[in-house]
Image 1 (tube, rainbow, N blue to C red):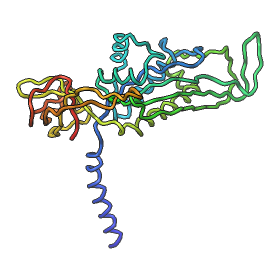
Image 2 (image 1 turned 180 degrees about the vertical axis):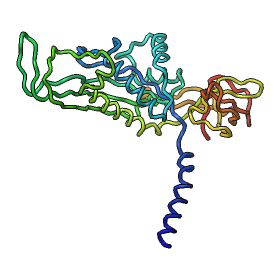
Image 3 (image 1 turned 90 degrees about the vertical axis):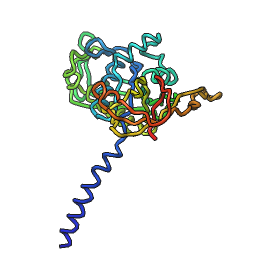
Image 4 (image 1 turned 30 degrees about the vertical axis):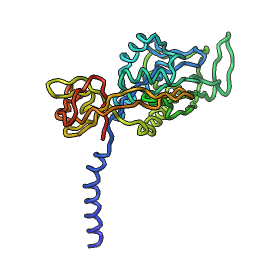
Length: 304
């Protein structure tokens, strides 16, 4: 009888815990992944004519999307804005400029950094034939990255980490000092590809660990016929019946010593309630006005 009661209690706890856990799941943060700076010796190439920095940043985007926890900005949209702002892919984007671009794009988090190491190390034993090295024994590969997460509201770096992964495998390969991959499958089968994927797992883990340091927010798209449209919907975890507070950003407060944003002097516009979270296939929501008036495009929507 005692074991039966314990079993029924366990079933009850599981039954009631699942909905509660689901309720605690936050809304999806919007993330922009900038092309990583390539600080390697530039003797490496990806398939599709991409640089190592482009390839690694694309891997981060793919893995973040696969988690289902984030709304990740399309690479094409980010590249277009970089061109409009006359910013290059490498060495120019700073935490401050990433924050400014992030605000324009409506993302809460920016992921940026550099690939510092990418390639094979010498085999344990090697011989040279006509200036070509023939590796024998064990071969190792290493991938190193410096990664930073930026709060786009302030330009503050909320997390930074040096990541380095290595892989070793038996080898009898021929090397001429460069690495090139014809396709993704060839990359995945290589030990440098496996080291890269391990590094990307750590990048995603860094984002997951620190994403709660930034609050979810959305923006007003427009007000029409007494209804307010916002740029976040079911895809981001917005639920029908939720009530949000809307603010209008005012003067930005900038720290005179660090140059970092300390926030803005915001004024409260009012409150809105979600009545349809599936506008634009879940990318936007239609809200009724609960209080306030004069809602404008760009007003910031926050959870209470």
